[in-house]
Image (cartoon, rainbow, N blue to C red; front, side, top):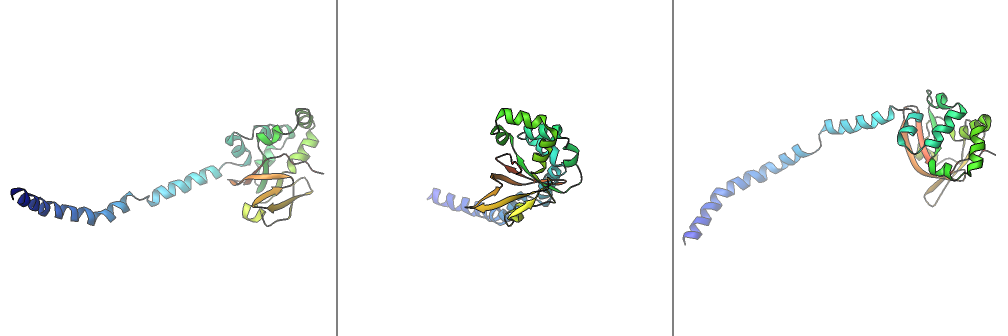
Length: 184
């Protein structure tokens, strides 16, 4: 009997506390939710990434070392650091590794041919993925057009698969491809 009275007394004392807790719960959840300033910080961080140009973005990614070396050898670094906008279908290091070593070394030694191959990977203007998938081809800085097709949810530029899209830069966009394209 004493325990029954005691538990009723505790319930009466605790119930108002629980009522307050439940009443304040929506407010505490709202306070714990991400604020506008934290969303803004994320946006600022995205904008920060976009402050880098195509060359600096590629170098910072750490997987375009061969492309960066080739751009330097071809004298195209300043072009791709320029105002743009440009769209670069960028072969990563794994794509360059598929090129036989002798052929790659010969290409790196021939500045004119190297520039032709590299500019075949560049389209004037910023062409985001949602627009790329609607194209049949795109005219490159090299002068000829590269074929674009979509099949089974995969996008191909020439005979290369697009593996990552819409890496935004201050002067354009990068789409990663898994093969080095060779102009005809």
